[in-house]
Image (cartoon, rainbow, N blue to C red; front, top):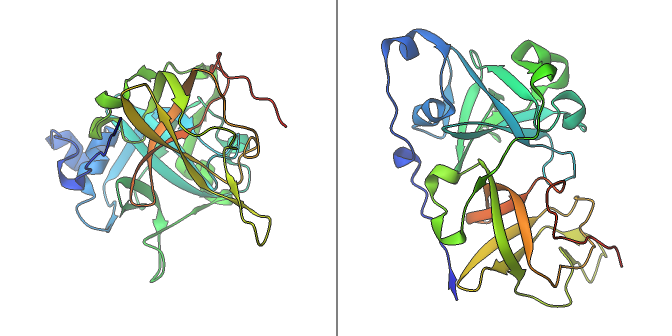
Length: 253
């Protein structure tokens, strides 16, 4: 079996049309914002807005203090200083993000947006009290967003932080849980598990805080739905929606 390694080059991720409208401001694509992240930290001075659907947040514990908004061109992480982001920006809601005055941060293979950071952080979280000055949630447009179907071998830079569905996967490990437990402290550890389609192998990262962390890995074929993220120096799939994983039986031991 081959483990798919995705080489992410931040400067080659997208080809964008830097039209006059883009330079003046207005609604732009998420891919265009990515193209502006030419260094580790870039302040957004134009009055840009982006629009898309929330394809990942903290609803099930896989992310914390952030959400991912995606449009047809890609996805981006929005940092938020809140312990319950889903209550503010529900999963699959349509949102408009006003980017003027925010800062883009380039971290490994992903781009994040938030307020200007300090010496320790390139980008800081948007305070919860200021969130609705920056983010407009259109509750009337809420619907179950359809993920793009991919095979492991098809995954590429265009898929980073977008909502995906990968079918007919099986866990490589047997008799294991989604996360490991520290033998000294008893604490959960964010863990990489491997899934295969019989030919290629997918890295799947599970956050220690997610609600199913101590559930056993499935022993049958499953469908995984989520985003292609970045973890521990390489791309990793992050499950962000359990509602349409029809073949997975999540039974706590």
